[in-house]
Image (cartoon, rainbow, N blue to C red; front, top):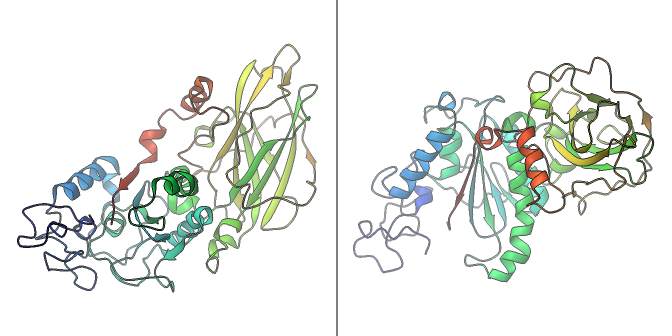
Length: 407
């Protein structure tokens, strides 16, 4: 069924047309018949009033409890920017057709934060290769008035987008498990990574690959290789202006998430080498005597030439203090980007010795809600402990709401 099956909505309708289309029941552009229906037996029936349904009320209540109250807007303020400082992402998951959609949906018009939302839609599409059901796009299929994505952006003041998953309304279970879920989970993880400041972080460059160079661990040294790009993930569907700035630098942090950086923490700056848009970096790190034995976390964050920071990525590695060198088998974070981008040029080396005595201070709005990409067994206790130590409030700070429904 598409609708809620509320027996008090749609008297006289057939058994499979009773109820309300919950994705037409939110209190934003509710009742607009260009994107919904007042006929109780129609598949797009919007209900007797805004938020008339208990399911819609429950989702709104949860969003109100989760997202910052100071970000809320009057629904009439459709031309007011929500801004780059907002926190939180709403993701609405539907079936089917292979689309990414984002505000506005009640009509084919661009929102005041369209540049950020266009970048967000393209970066999500980078993972699943979905079409953009978006303002100004040739794949804007039809308007949807009173839908959750418009409400969460327009009223709650958070970034929002939706996915139309798969090929069928009732997807084959094997296809879902083998194709749909593996294709879309990286997109959802990306949304989590930028959720602390989605409209800012989505405009910054992405860490495409972060690895410890094989066989580089000796005499207390270790080489780290990074590929960062400002354009790769937004170049689909005609590209986006947010991908034109190139990568200015990559910053590495040892055992401290960039959001928690303080002067005196260990940090290395990697200057860009190569093209201005897709840059390959390599850094030789020499570990001071104070690095303890055991597992450590290395964080990386890139900045573009407009000073926009991108989301944080990280890897684990182990140090043996008996020899004062990293493990010969570092635990690299598996790259979710390998199937999209493989660097072809030999990395150019920029050699650095000790971390700077006065590490470069983190810019004032550095941030990402995700502390790391785990490697190996995701249930590994050491991995979980490293994540919790690095960002203990990630679940609270992230402010991510996932709504699963058929619509």
